[in-house]
Length: 364
Image (cartoon, rainbow, N blue to C red; front, side, top):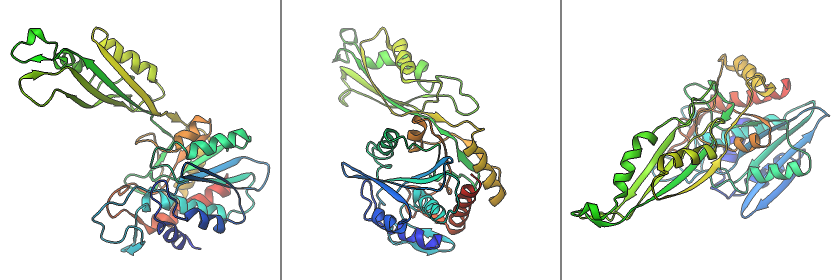
């Protein structure tokens, strides 16, 4: 199939997390000349397609077949690909069935690659991601088959196609502070212990504060308060306790232990509890890595843009490759309509993305 035909086929599957809606069955048939490792765990499906051409390096493309629910208000059926004015509309058009389609075709048409070429696909990226990419990587490690390099085809470009490669991602740490006080009558504040008064003293020292200075690759890790609530929504009772929620998108310079220490330093004289967890760890790929250099070179040659090397944005499955010590980059189409109503991708971007992946395979 040409890239547009393949993309429309994949776009038509109603693959809302964690259901692949039969897309993997189609891909298994489409990639018959590749070996496949299958993992189905708690409703999540993972597929690892691979072909060994020679004894050289192992290059892996990765992506997810699952999409978020479409929501209401579309101008066309979100699972019936609609072509109009140079665009194709459908849920997952940018995030990330365009990238997946491009690397599937590029790998299928590859000839005389010097090493092993593979594709890791999951139906659990938009959800909790507990049983998706990370589980397949654990299995690959157990059989000594981890890739040397990986390309995750998430939509990365911002203003123009080709303007951004992601070479890392910040982590994400979530926390909840419960500040305990003594409930009382608002008319008798001395008989109560108001946690709102308590937190007011420390907010200037914590709200929006940078926890590190950042570096060439990362913005500073910032302590972002996302919710504060207390009381019973009445005017004459002071609250018994207060709940504050926060998030830190952390670089490699700030750890979960650093944040625990930061909270304790500011709340140490108060009666509080802290619940904290890291939902994603940060990673960075060296700017001089082979996969970064070649991806930059190929993009520049095909679209005449020198891409920016970025770590901005939220989390993706690239973080799991980073945890396993695999040099990883992300590159895909523009991300201006991801998760939105009337999500769409420009056909020209789709065609150029396939060309970029083909050329990268040739040069690797």
